[in-house]
Each structure stands twice: as structure tokens, then as C-alpha cells.
Length: 216
Image (cartoon, rainbow, N blue to C red; front, side):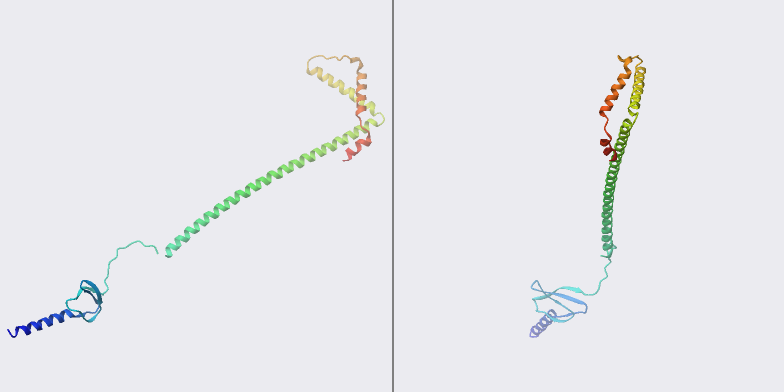
């Protein structure tokens, strides 16, 4: 019995030393828990633990482990940048195209309005020129008629011309209506012509009054 106690003490000391001393191999890491909570991580080497309080909860290997990763599709920040720039360039192109189309339509409307305006101006100028030329021709004609009337034998020529036109128009009227028309004063055609000549003399204008209109 006297040897049992010392042997038991020795065994207890060995157990305590085993639980206290820990050697961590290279490329290993031990996680130590104290009373159930994380305490520290032991790296490679010799370490002393508190018996019955500390324990090795996890042994982790620091060696590299090859892991097979399944192939998957990925987009690189270069590819994404190219796609972004392509989208921006396309949108800018569309914007410029719309601007160009709108500007073209605007210029077309302006050109059409200018063409219409120029046409109206030209037509107005042409009409004004035509009126001016007609007025000038009329004034010259009136001046020549007035000069012919006041010249020697002018009145007789006018009377003869009036008589001729009266007879012609009267004949045309009778032929158009298919009816024979005889005026009351058929025997006094000369008197009618003389009356028309008096009217013409009354409305005739002297050369001094007609000259300014013709010269304008």
C-alpha cells in the first residue's frame, strides 16, 4: 500500500503534464477554449495550458487546399467599360441623328417660306410693272387721240370713225338677235353722229392737261 500512493501521484502528474503542455505542429493552428469560451489560437510551437480550464477545441490545418470551382461566366471591368462606352456612343449617335433631322426639316421649312415670299414679291412687282406700263400706254394713247382731234381735219375724222362704228355695231346687234331693229331716227344718223361728236368734244382734254400724265 505504501507504493500505491506514490504511483498514483506520478500518474496524476503525468496526466496534468499531458493536459498542460501542447506542441503545435508546423502549418497547424489550435483553437483554445477556456470554460467553454474562445480564449486564443495556438500557432506552431510549445504551449502551456491551464489544466481542467483550457482545452483544445479545434485543430485547423494551414496547408493550401485545392478546391475545384465549377466554370462560370464572368464579365471583366475592361469588358464592362467597352460595353458602357458602346451604349453611350450609340445613344449619342441617335441623339445627333435626331438633331440633324430636326435641323434639316427646319431649314426646309425656311427655304420653302423664302421661296413663297420671293414668288409673291416677284408676282407683285410684275403686276405693278404691268399696271405701270398699261397706265403709260393709256396715257400715251389718250395724248395721241387728243392731238389728233385738235389737228386740222381731226374732228371730221373722229366723226367719220364714230359713224362707222355705230353702223357696224347696229348691224351686229340685228344679226345676233335674228330680229330686224330699226331706230326711230334712222334718217337722222348724221345728227346722232354730230351729237356724239359734241359729247366727245366736251370730255376731250387739252394738251396741257394730258401732257403731265403721259410724261409720268
